[in-house]
Image (tube, rainbow, N blue to C red; front, top):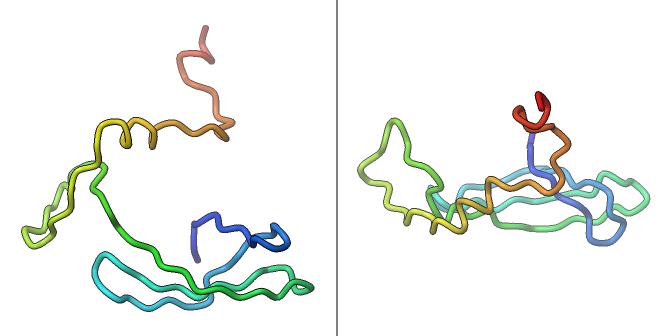
Length: 92
């Protein structure tokens, strides 16, 4: 099952991936369905791997992706919806 958090643009309920097809090692086309039966919207989406955020421990020499800029990696570490307390803040 998918771990993506996709929301229907019409009714704002969650979307599920019904099926997907690999176009390339870095590109996948997915067909989505709204989980709200009253809405019933369906969509086509594409998921693309664009950057490497951290290096692999088992690198494939044929994989050539740019390393994400430092600002992008830093932003990825920030989660504005995070509810988990920081360990150091919890012990203070």
